[in-house]
Each structure stands twice: as structure tokens, then as C-alpha cells.
Amino acid sequence: MTYNAAHPSPHRGKTGLLCLLYGLIAAPSAWLVSQIADAALAQEACFPGTEPLITPVFDGLHAIQAAVLMAALVISASAAWVALGAWRSTRGEQSGDQHALLFVGEGRSRFMALAGLLTSAGFGLGTIFSLPALLFVVSC
Image (cartoon, rainbow, N blue to C red):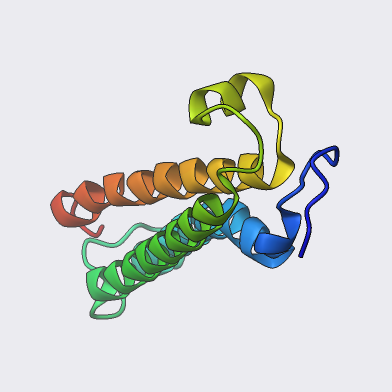
């Protein structure tokens, strides 16, 4: 396949749009769902009526919240992996390294791949930062 150097994204055929979007969207979505799910679980278990409870209504609240957190971490890691693959296949799309890419923004595919990699890593780290709350804060 020949690539047109005049096109803003000459290596667009080396990676798919779904890969680029997954790298951009999966980790923030997983983090958001995990935060909402954990808050909803804690609210339902500790404050089901008009009065707060001392112990959760159902057993295994922390285990369920930990499973939700681990699922978000797996999704974030897979999004970072997919974005890294897209970055590796498109990093030679335009001249300049990743620092020039951030300032100039040439090469849409490699820009989206790098943005997906940074987003996935950032939200993966944010998901990890949720772990101390799960470990050290009491359920109710």
C-alpha cells in the first residue's frame, strides 16, 4: 500500500479507527463506570433507607468493589496496550519525535495513538489511586 505524504494522516491504513478510539475512550469510561458503580454499591449497602447503617446490608461489599476496580484496571491496561500498538505502527507518519507531535500535531493517526496512550495511562493511574480508599476506608 502506498501512502500519500501530503495527506494529514498518511499512515491511517496501518491502524484502525476502532483501535484509536478504544485507546482514547476505554480507560476513561472504565474509570467512570468503576467510580459510579463503587459509589452506588456503597450507598445501597450502607444507606438503603433513611438511616445510615454501621455494617453493610450484604456481605462481600469490598470484594465486589475490588472486582469492579480490577476490571477497570484490566480495561485500562488493554486500552494502553492497543494504543501502544497503534503508536508503534504510526509513529513514523510525520517527521519529528513525540515532543514535536504534541506541539505541532501533524499526523492525526499518531496523534490519536499518543493521546490514547497518555489517556489510558493517566486513567489507569487514577484507577490505581482509588485502591487506598478501598483498602483503608471502612465500608460504612
